[in-house]
Amino acid sequence: MDNANKRVLVVGATGYIGQQVVKELVKRKFQVVAVTRRKVEKEEFEGAEVRIADVENLESLKKEAFRDKINVVISCLSSSTPLPEELYKIDYLATLNVLHAAQENATDHFILLSAICVRWPKLPLQHAKLKMEDALMISGMDYTIVRPTAYYRDLLRQFPTIRKGSSAYIFGNGEYALYNPIAKEELAEFMVNCLEEPSHRNRVYPIGGPEVPENIITYKQIMEMSFEALGRKPKIKSLPLWTLPTMIAITTFIGVLIPKVRLATEVIRVLQYYLTNDLRAPGYGRKTFKDHLATLGNQ
Image (cartoon, rainbow, N blue to C red; front, side, top):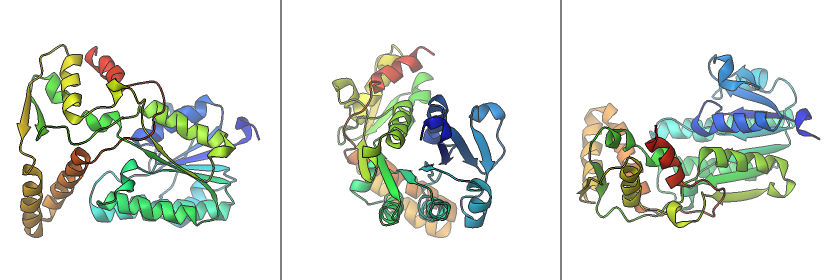
């Protein structure tokens, strides 16, 4: 079946990676169905058909998203909050709804965007994604599971304040973890390759960006490179590493009384994990983090 006759449905289409996957599919001339919860501007998904459905409602998915034959599903669903109940609801239950709808539709192939961090599961996100991976692998449907390392976006949270003249902050020496981050364009390219190449079926792929010195980096190097891209001398302040578990303990206690503080606790837990666990994966693509910074520095 050629691309023009293959209908590919993307859930999580409005997300950071989902939008790029839709663009890549359109570029390769697939019939693309982008599933959203809301109306979007036509230009947002040019070349794709937009279908509005609630991924948390199986009947909505079957009626609206899967109303005709779908050949391949690509799931980029991911919760926008680190709260455990939200992660379970979206990264597992909603994604499981998509799988069930795909099974009823007799869809041929399900491509799941997971995360490299499931290798060492300690956080609710990782447990939810692993649970979904397991469900997919025993479903009987052909699958491909893609586990990317860090995204550029996630490593550049401090860049806007650095650009405005602020110092950067690290914890300890900032060298407890190594990353080879991947560009969203090249991750999308790889995921669509999985659709086109039969040998990529029933496989799990850890994937990062190019394994070259300027893309195998510590958090401290990320901060140093950010200043370099802006043509400035680095101003980096170090906070003690014990600050993180102390903040988790304090916010956990306060969160018992003030539920909204639970969000801060989970954000700090995620930060601690990413700053203290290596997130390297086999390399793919050509674009490096340094290349990306160069484009930001010139803006």
